[in-house]
Length: 353
Ligand SMILES: NC(=O)c1ccc[n+]([C@@H]2O[C@H](COP(=O)([O-])OP(=O)(O)OC[C@H]3O[C@@H](n4cnc5c(N)ncnc54)[C@H](O)[C@@H]3O)[C@@H](O)[C@H]2O)c1
Image 1: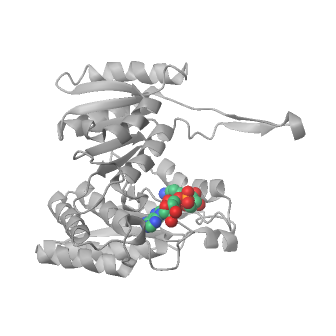
Image 2: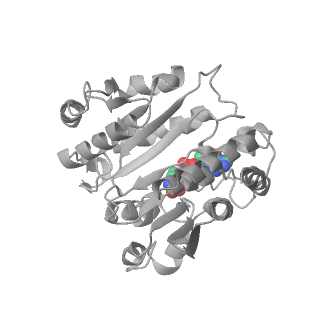
Image 3: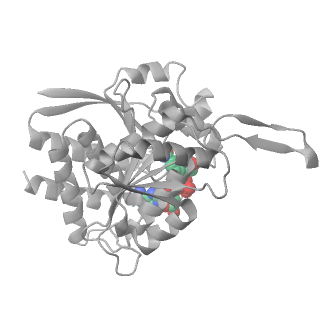
């Protein structure tokens, strides 16, 4: 029996609802596998913790997390209680940075049983590889002066090491799929960092002559996500561009509530962190109607990363089977509760065992 120690941070809002649902599904998956078990250790780090302690996690929080195999996180943020830049930078982004989770992987796929908001979409199945450690989300900058002289500067940082790492990951991933990489650029408008991004892409792609590639400006790429998402396989993007594109990826699937994500420490020196694309959804939190699919699919990505893709595949099948039965939460136009959606997925998962 192989045991894995997983740190669980449900976080805020609907994170408290969808994380327990996903853990139930992962437990059922482990049971089906027979040789795999989880030790779940819960951490209460969220905005309420901040109000009580003045910080989002204890001082030794990162050191504590280092002892785990992986981190399973819901969502962070309660803008009515704590400013978003404090909650996100104090927990989520801190973990991503300190654990060197430099690659963020976010798939978008036309799921069986789901109506995409696109009219007659062709079968799309794409993955966005987002650089996750620098780019537009840098801490370099500041504010000076006050009143009408007030100004703010935010510097974007692009290093060759991190840019190349994301691009190589994208090419390696494409080789296991349909073998095409698209680079999201904006070198017509951003005159330093994006031409640099393009140069690195040219250099990296030379090492993968068998893989087809293209480079598309982010504004056009966003439009193509709507017009012809089926044409894409793997897309590599900077931190900000990848962040925006993947919300769109969730939207064309049918809801941001189903979009999964993984923050990977590809060197496997530190734990990776698995958290869905969506946030804490304060507008629906506490009503038991949040969609657990994004968190459950995120659990499938954790299994894939840990070397259990066959069990992960059963989870995705179960999600699609439950949706095909018409079990849908309100964000997908249905009436199912979080509990009912989870039960339907569990039922289909156990049927496959
Ligand atoms: N990874 C994260 O922790 C993360 C990501 C994005 C936003 N946030 C934070 O979450 C808070 C709310 O942000 P937001 O409103 O911009 O984005 P959000 O993703 O929380 O919600 C956007 C919309 O989608 C709906 N939605 C999201 N997930 C859903 C689900 N699983 N089921 C049903 N409906 C769902 C919400 O009800 C809302 O209408 C903010 O504090 C923000 O900073 C955190």
